[in-house]
Amino acid sequence: MPNAPDDTDEKLKKLVVKCSRIKISANDINENSNLMSDFGYDSISLIQLTVDIEKEFSMVSDDEVWILDLSSNYSNLKKYVGQNFVNRKA
Image (cartoon, rainbow, N blue to C red):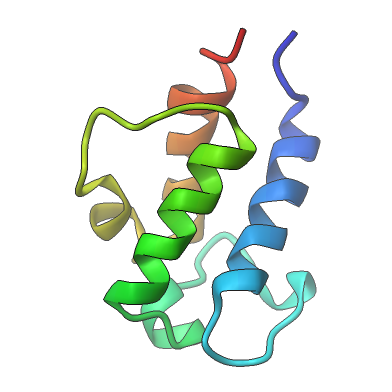
C-alpha cells in the first residue's frame, strides 16, 4: 500500500531538514523552497538527501542526476518522489 501524500510530504520534509547545512524546521519548507539557495544545500548534502530518500522509500533511482534537476523547487522534488518512489513501492 503506498504512502498517503501527506505522509510522503512529512517524511520528505524531515529528510530535507536532516540534510540541510543550516538549521531549519519543516515549517520553513514550502512548495517554492529552493534547497540550494534557501537551505544551504551543496553537492554533498544533495547526495546525502538522495541516499536518505532512497532508503526511506525503499527504492533506487534509475536516474543518478534527478536530485540536481529537482533541487531548485521543493514542489517538483515532492512530485518526483511521489511518482517515482512512493507509487512504485511494494
